[in-house]
Structures are given as structure tokens and as C-alpha cells.
Image 1 (cartoon, rainbow, N blue to C red):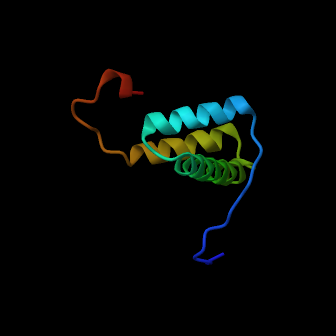
Image 2 (image 1 turned 90 degrees about the vertical axis):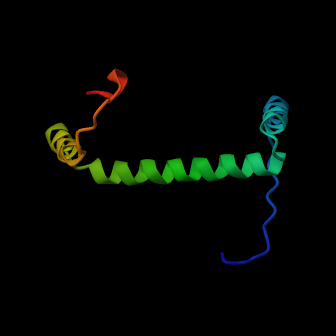
Length: 88
């Protein structure tokens, strides 16, 4: 997988999705290829993150999950001037 030459992937997508892809790429000032690559990379990252947490929490009950959460939150220092929307 360390091949320096990029691979080519051909996919079939609905016309409406292609239109949205073109429009969004234009609005973002990037090529369709760049936007599609970013979308693929983001989706893969999200799937890996979801899989990690699914495996981590699969055998834990709600109490254990909340205890873990409280432990993490206790390590966060109290911030001054925290906006009201960012308070628990």
C-alpha cells in the first residue's frame, strides 16, 4: 500500500449526487477529485472511530460508561468565562 503512484477508482453515482458534488466542489474552490477524496477520508475516519468505541464499550454497562466519563471530565480543569452553552 506504500505505492507512490495514486490508484484510480471508478464509481457510479446518481446524477443528482454528481451534480451536488460538482456544485459543492465549485463553491469550495476545489476539484471534484479533491472533494471526493476528502469525503472518502472523512467517512473512513468516522467508521474507524465508531468501530473503536463500539468495541471499547461493547461489554460495559451504563454505570461503567458514566464512571469513565466522570473520570475524564475530572481531568478537565475548570475554565473561567465558560459560555453557558458549554456547561454541563
